[in-house]
Image (cartoon, rainbow, N blue to C red; front, side, top):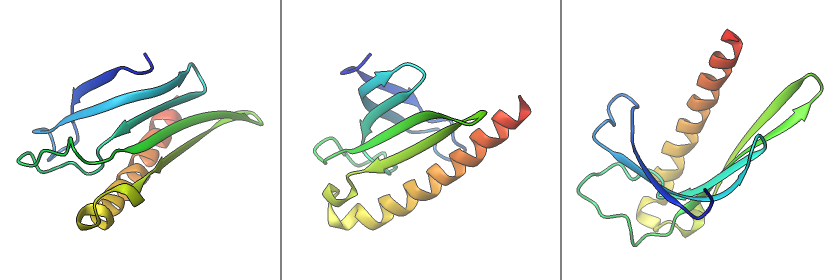
Length: 109
């Protein structure tokens, strides 16, 4: 539900010790999901709660005989300078890897 905070366990190998906290911004069933989170919050000894969040938007659009998935994460310019470049690098690589995973999953049909 929009406006609701959610927490879940990370299942990606090597990061299972982390919990992911997100705040759902928007839901349009079968079209859009957006949430805010603290990017690259991977050090369990750090409290990231006072930092700004980034906005992640998943958008589905019908195209031809298929569906286009677009994932955009914005707001890195607000992340503290000491973490900004690394957070952007980690998340860019992470989203690219997840897109490959989604493509493989869809190809299985």
